[in-house]
Length: 463
Ligand SMILES: [Zn+2]
Ligand SMILES: [Zn+2]
Image: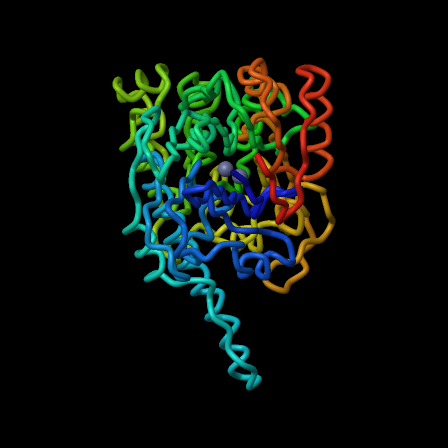
């Protein structure tokens, strides 16, 4: 068998593996390249397989950098099943719908200008109809339940602790009378986080494809991060500040809710208005409520006692663009949470354009900010930021909270690897910028004696 790395090689986006055996061809993940300037080109490039020849697609989780090329593959002829955990497929549906909606909007704006200048019009990567076709192929696969997804290939999904429904994929391949196990980590979450269960990788594999997003560093501890967050809230209420927080709709939003609830419950922070200005975030929160099977014990208890609902009584959801604009006139103290998480689009940009030049505004950045995003520019404390063509002088205070990440830091990545390492698998590192990947490779060698490979985009590994 062989595996072709079709994305997330030396970078964090575009996750996609083509697995080929004597009898079967399948993809594990089919993610979008995001952020970089050559992303569009890479997204449109053909995969090294005719999609109509694929037997199956298996998803680790719903994030677009793992699922966002699905509509393209379906457009080009794939008509087989798309396997993922039931919550994952639900989340994938809302994320892909949202992506199609944003593309339609963006292309609409660009084409308006092009039409004026008599330039040729451009097409979106995909449309809502394409997403509907993808959803029609969804084949929910519960956790820890092996299923033959292609001739001679069985897939089992195990908890990855990253977002709602996230999994690692364990492929068992029968070929030439031998059986081999290939583990794809997907994105790995940290241990001991609220809401989700801890990652649960298998204890043995012949080959491991592992993410390395934070291969070289640890996040600030969750405890210190929560302290800092509660401190910012306390101060904001006292000084009547307006807080802006870019959030990812899935995972980050619900985690922030959890820590807001604990701040209000303890009485350390008096209740003040919180707005979730993200229809997508609201949908994702509803999915978290629907799929209770993924909760850890503490979360189950909070839900059963209705405690969370009471704690978050000052939370309001905004729907229409008018509701969103109305928040411009709301005075502090308040917290406005809006997407996109890295400020590379979405309603948060409007709030930032309105608020960045004001000294009574504070911005709370949480989590990974990819290169070439407004979020990264703010995190690096630039004096000016360009939004919608305007150069804004940053007078708002910028906070960066390190410990709310949905990604394992180096210590937890090694904890994860330590579970499968005794079986001495062949280790392949992906999904990380090169310096992070190198750092993790060194640790894998020092701690477990595993010589990690670091493939480039398009590399083919014979297993
Ligand atoms: Zn992810
Ligand atoms: Zn990812």
